[in-house]
Length: 77
Image 1 (cartoon, rainbow, N blue to C red):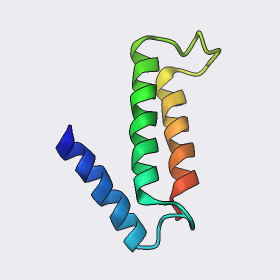
Image 2 (image 1 turned 180 degrees about the vertical axis):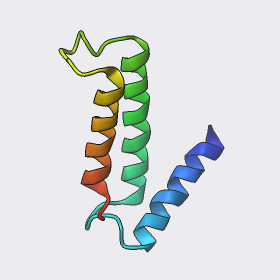
Image 3 (image 1 turned 90 degrees about the vertical axis):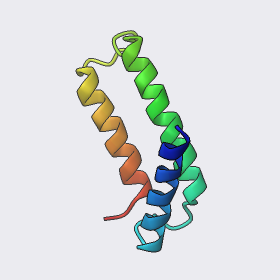
Image 4 (image 1 turned 45 degrees about the horizontal axis):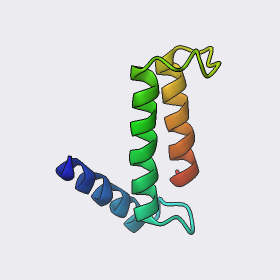
């Protein structure tokens, strides 16, 4: 897990170096929120909570849309 975490940090820092992070976004914040979001979505999927949360789309579609929304709010281009 530690190696994976460091890879996320490096990817986010590379995006910042390339000017692809939105202004004011801090790499350490992106890393924490990305990990928490993926962990939470995985738990919701694994525990089959999407219907309980009134999500009508298939779990794959709902998860993909949530991740796209997150990425679009953090990165440019």
